[in-house]
Image (cartoon, rainbow over all chains, first blue to last red; front, side, top):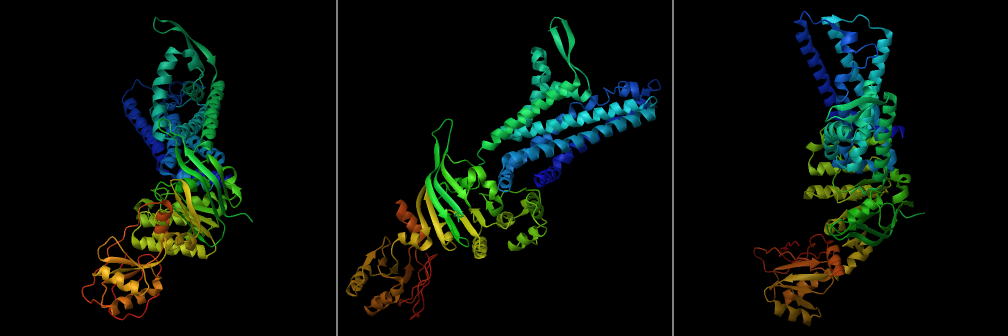
Length: 273
Length: 349
């Protein structure tokens, strides 16, 4: 299993897309910070405080807000294309003549994808924090950065990495189920931005609190999952806490486990032809 | 000791949602029992060869019957013997952007193969000079060779090659034949599927022929080929009726062929010289003569009731209406040649 895991990790890291998306995001981060620097620098009244304005307080709940959605989406795409390319090229068939135990193969892919995507996401999140810190140091203040703050920042980076890793595993599982990376990526983007984020959260809020995107966002940011009670159409509603970010993380894990088990069971019985 | 490959009553039916189910393989039985042999798995396109091979490798589940490789059931426990089996299924399937070496190294890492394994197989297939080029830049023949290198990486006891000559030019096909033979000569069993019966006839020791998913025949090559009819000598001559009468007086039976100037003499190819002499002594000079031997193709057609194999027109010599010696006919083994009494007429089939 170790050699299979190492080979699968090597395979993931030998793909261009594994570098392309993270590099693109890193460039976007740098470009965004540079633009922000020139905008803020010319404004004498704007004095950026790293703790309050960027981190959102000592609990650092806003520090990774800008990338809360981007990193899981990136991880899903990396995972989906990782298995999808091999399904399309027939390489899966080749690999299965070397390791015919399909569940081991799926497990190795999932673990390789999860760990790799988590590492990538954490590096990107750390880069973003570093850039924000430099920005604040250049055009504002970084006073008040305590050990507690950095502990919370590190926890946020870790949760973001874990969420991204889980979404990479989710991407692998969904692509295996659908037998196509194009279908899974398209379906995922539509689901994320339209079905869950808009339709379900608006019309079925009781269901939405248990869905993966809502819980991933909560887990990454460290915020509670909230539910709308009442009707948003006549302004007679209130937002109430449903569960905390740790439960949200467990809900996310449950979604990934279910999808992985399902995809493994389907793939194990599928004819590779 | 279990057979290397044992297919027992194998049936595979592909379920279709809208159309009728497709029976890809029906009650197929075959055995590959000896190391160092090349077993041809032959049949027309769509006859179920690749489906059978996928069942052998545990890639698809049989609807019925059993498939065992080195005694292990392919569906449930192929992993016990996967290290002893190298395979190519249909087209070479490797990463297009990776170099040949990198592709092989990835597979070698999967099985923790010793260092030097990649170099060894690259040398065997003659790709050691192009190993750093990307797979997508390879010609079809090079891709096939790299796929064979991948299959050989594990130093397998059984090599399964599905249509390895597909898309190759004549030189590539000849190279492939030599390679397959040399692998078998090293003591490995080779199962090679193909729809090119004449090609496989040159390299196989035993064959299984299937058609429409059903077994037609299986056995040693010579035994299967004997179903292709008796050997004969085919003569090209202007006065065909006169020649038939003349040969009849010599005790040889001749039949007109579909071509107006061609007749088939029912004699062993070793007696071609007698045919030649009889006609020449009777004053009837032939324009062409060739040995026609039973082939896998004729055996297949005889066994399946298909149309007779097409006969290529003989090459007409520029002059020399003289007795000729027989030559090897196409892919058939060469007939014993008498010393030429006149300029030989070379014919091909």
